[in-house]
Amino acid sequence: METPIAQKFVEALSEERAAQQSQNALDRWINERNELRAQLTASQDALARANRFKDLALELFADPIKEIVKSEMVAYVSDFDITAYEDEIKEIASENFASDLSDHDGEINDLISFDIADHAADVETVVRDILRDATVKLEV
Image 1 (tube, rainbow, N blue to C red):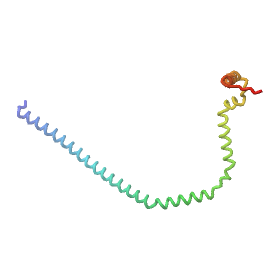
Image 2 (tube, rainbow, N blue to C red; image 1 turned 120 degrees about the vertical axis):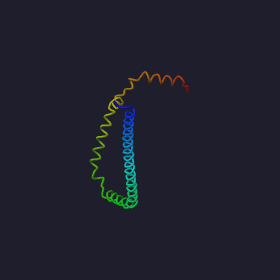
Image 3 (tube, rainbow, N blue to C red; image 1 turned 90 degrees about the horizontal axis):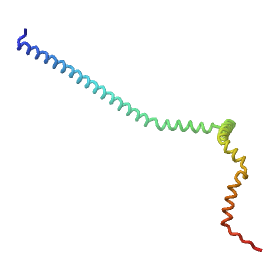
Image 4 (cartoon, helix red, strand yellow; image 1 turned 180 degrees about the horizontal axis):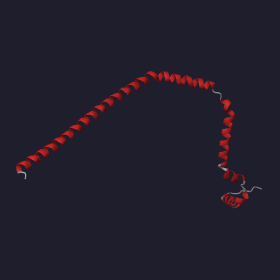
């Protein structure tokens, strides 16, 4: 059987071991955090250098690139002959016109097949309204 002093000693040792393990874990986490901070700083420095390089390259090459593109566009425009594509353009336009026209077939047929006799009552009402308010003057 253990004496109370021995038991307290064992408990104190156990608590000290647990505290030491906690401190070791905390130290590892602090070291890991410090390493991650160092990696972050290095990455931010590398990104800043890359951005400075990009800005310098853009400043250095912007005008020459613009001139190259401009000269290529001028060459393309001067070499481009739209008449070579005239038949293709006509074909595309006629296909689109035909499909657009077919979208309105019903309306077109209604307009073509319009018969005033179908609207005689409406016409009669309009004419009566106009004549009702009209003044007729007969001269002999």
